[in-house]
Each structure stands twice: as C-alpha cells, then as structure tokens.
Length: 83
Image 1 (cartoon, rainbow, N blue to C red):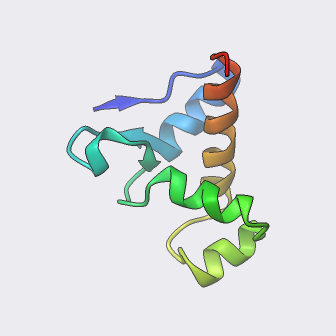
Image 2 (cartoon, rainbow, N blue to C red; image 1 turned 90 degrees about the vertical axis):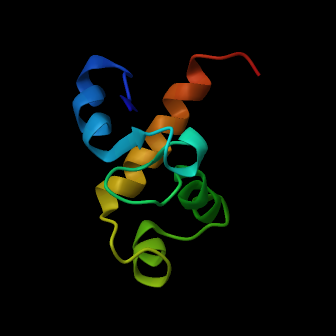
C-alpha cells in the first residue's frame, strides 16, 4: 500500500486522507479508510455540487477535508505531468 507523497506542507494531510491500495478498486486513489474512489468525489465536484452537498447527499461518511484532499491530490498529480 502506498500513500500520497506530494508537496511537504500538504503531504501529511494528504497521506492521512488519500490512500492507494492495490487491493481496493484496482489501486485507484481512494479516501483513506473507505472504499470511495477519489474520482467519484471529483466527478461530483465537476458537476458543481458543493462539498457540503457531496457529503450530505452522496457520502455522509466523508468530511469536508476529505473532499478538499481529493481536489488537492488531483491538482498535484496534474501539475507533475504534461497533458
């Protein structure tokens, strides 16, 4: 199992909130301690739902910091690669 290794300041928060485990969803990043794929959360964000709506209507086990961690993880991954 591997953890997020982004920028030093955010790395500790991300490591607690996002995890990659080859035995869960084929190794796709998930919210730590859940089987919720990060991409599912990001799709809801892209649809314009607020973080509060995502938690209330779709993933009541998440906290706002979990949703923020998903967004930040995606930003960090994209900023390291050319598209």
